[in-house]
Image (spheres, helix red, strand yellow):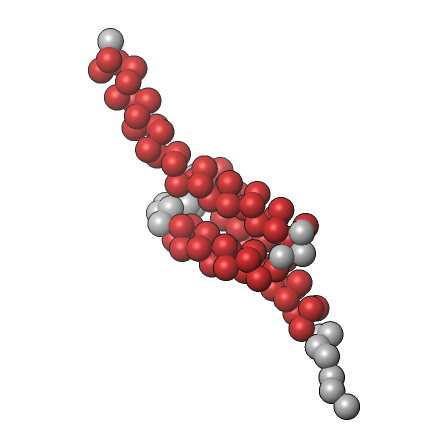
Length: 93
């Protein structure tokens, strides 16, 4: 019975660990952006992009492709936020 259920469950759990970590990271970054904490969000997105590189064969999996698109979307939001916030630097006279 253990071989029938436990081993496949452990294999599936291992297979899903990385995508779930990335998904949770996306949610944390979105919360950071809502709190206007762009610096921490930028650091976290760089770590997530490293994890995305470890996913492997993304093209053949619609869920993983969607996950990569979400990471890229959040990365674009961070870059846009950083770009607009850099336009308002203090000027000394």
